[in-house]
Length: 171
Image 1 (cartoon, rainbow, N blue to C red):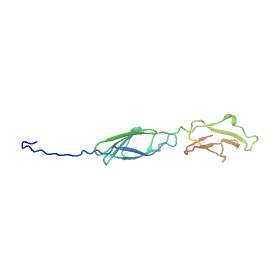
Image 2: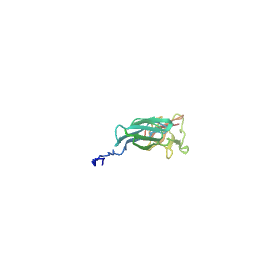
Image 3: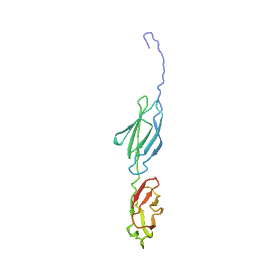
Image 4: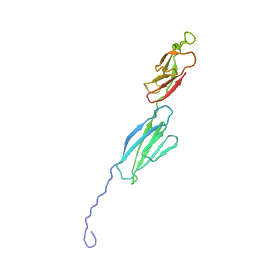
């Protein structure tokens, strides 16, 4: 009431914006041990547009993009801020497979029987928990099995390729 006895009724609405949300579009872990080909892609929605993005990660990594690429192994943290300074945070882990490790089974090695023949033998094994199965074998003489029974005298090599295309050579 004012001094004259008048009153005014008034109402107003206080708006509340939707909460911010992060949607993980895709995450790609590192394909081969020691590579830097990880990738994370997100979409944000809710809150008030526009949104800003701040990624931080290993080795001083910083980005303001929605998709980040060429990532090392480690944890990548994200802060999304809308125009009203509302924020949401999340973090994502980029992993890598264990290194591809090979061994020549010493008991499998047999020398050629006679000079000039190609009946030597050797077997390559992929050590457990290394690389990503299945594995492909390619010997320097073209044999495509872990066991090679047609080796000539001299040095032979075997290239092993895992499911991700990672390669290791043993001789």
